[in-house]
Length: 184
Length: 152
Image 1 (cartoon, each protein chain N blue to C red):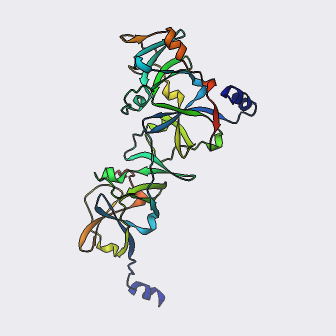
Image 2: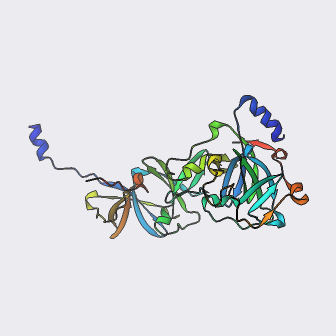
Image 3: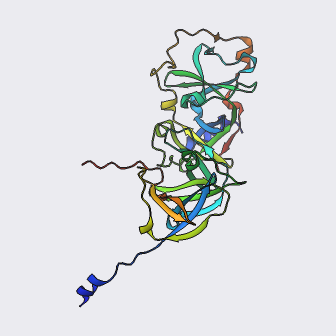
């Protein structure tokens, strides 16, 4: 069953968060599905600083870079997530998409109080996912506007750029094609 | 008279029951009552974090515990295949600590024999002598908690 169908059902009872779970290095991260406009296999294009797709310009960074972690090397299967939130457009590279999942609020647990620093802002909580754990990324922080050199709207001084082209637009993966599953 | 007797009664010293374990071959001791259990270590899920030495979650069925990386703090690496998981009863909730695969041992000490240390960590209680050697004693209830500085 497609996400499109399940999202209609979820909208009736309003019980589920729809999250896209991705792997960034050893970390499993869940992004709110509504902010992900699509995915783009990088293929041979490699990572670019700026991508323009369907008229929207996205500054691209590795998702791991948001935590100052060392990103994984770019592989042929590296994916670019095209995100939009409150008018901010950002692209994040991830190693792999693990799936689309519907999580009931009662299944989402807060980060333990032992975590006391910025990570409390980075994550809204976590949930059990396929024998491990996925961290629910806070979109307010992930796509926070204009507070640094990598701000979404700060597009000056960017050299490498890829734009819409037949090969790129043809490769965009819409979330609707991914089957959603329910959390444990 | 009871009042007089109580004055003369000698103070009873209660020995502490300790668990002696090792991390990277380095022995250390913790109080038995502060240990929630010992079980095989399983792969934790890293969590990007700026909290010192708290950077992973460990899942055991439905239970999820934050991991305190005591080995990194001691500049050691837990040995054993697999290493063991020590459950620490920290005052704000249980934590998992990776220790060597060597089975921990039990012992008792007289707390008055503890040798204090100048180390300012709130979770370091001092050194106790076990088998003729000084072994650092840690408080798991305060593990990794910042040292409280009292204003004078």
